[in-house]
Length: 123
Image (cartoon, rainbow, N blue to C red; front, side, top):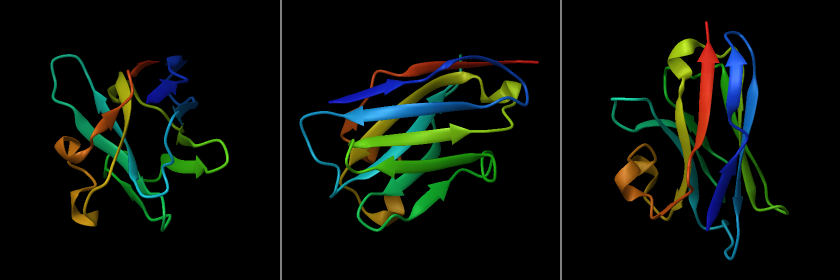
């Protein structure tokens, strides 16, 4: 089970840190990813991390502004979001799954999902 938290309302240019805590399982063999879905739009990839190797991947739209990291002891993955823009407004979901490296940005390949946390960036 994945539990996402940390969303809220922030002004453009501000920062938020999202957390995704895993319970009942280890993440050591998984990819962990963040996806987002804005109103009226499809869910899109934001960032992912291969837990075992530490490799990280980002969507072009967030590269340089967002950072995915993990705390193994807490079985928690974080998404640090800086320089937020109004277009970052969305419900953010964390996900985990065992997948090929080439599939890191494909939502359908992730087996486990958190409930989503809303991020609203005001202009």
